[in-house]
Length: 372
Image 1 (tube, rainbow, N blue to C red):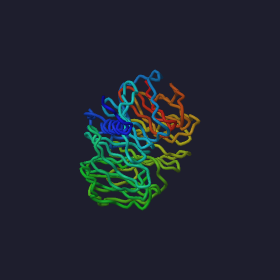
Image 2 (image 1 turned 45 degrees about the horizontal axis):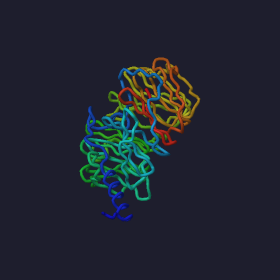
Image 3 (image 1 turned 180 degrees about the vertical axis):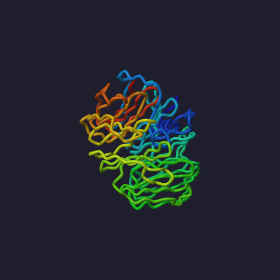
Image 4 (image 1 turned 120 degrees about the horizontal axis):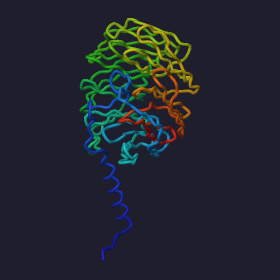
């Protein structure tokens, strides 16, 4: 009779765990663009024009582990999310079941970025890293030491970009992570860049505006006029920037000349939402504004009475936002009236995500929610 020692049994179980952990996700391919961006696409304009009917039902909730700071990333039939417990989770979109848990050696507090079978992410540890993982087999393609990053890395025109708290924008080769160039912004870049054609637009926290080309050369620089903490949005040749002092200014993307400006007595930390006729913007104190795109007139406003630090999205006829206290709001885009209000567990500091007719939310209490 075969004798199995305790040591041998433990070693076999350990190998089994390693083997299972190495398989992350299989045959992922984003169906429309081949990439998944934290704010929909490189314009940062999170407007989804699908026909969206919301009933207010909780479809599922998944306990991952507290806290969760980044938004989930939908890729085909899975939601991918990183956590401070040094794991990346793959959750089934339909059921909320955890498909895989993939251990990494860094805590993750930022969004993930996916393109063509590769997942890129940064960590928040003593030795910050930028990592690329093959989603088919979980193999780490490369990792690079990097400064502390505030946001997700982004890929554009076969180049990988990310910013650091030290005030630099880095451009890397996505194949091996080798640096192509870096640009010193002289202050913290708290926002995601914009990309179009061969252009990169980025700002720093004190409000300096930079227009670069994809080789890192400065095309234009405009000195700061106020602090910026919200992602800019590009729409129809115009860049919209909310300032922390209550100004919303829009600039020509080719010259950075001011095209329009409106001042509202509030503080802006969130990206606006732009459509053909309207600008929607939300203040930190929870006031939602609708502004006429053509003349800058405020059409309506609604004070939700709660602190909100995540950026809203527009899904169908609904403006969707979450409060720091854990409440999900859906407002009618035509009049700003709250049509649905759902109380969830835990603070929510990450942006809501719309995907395949559902809303997905991550809370700092460690839960991932799916609602429809």
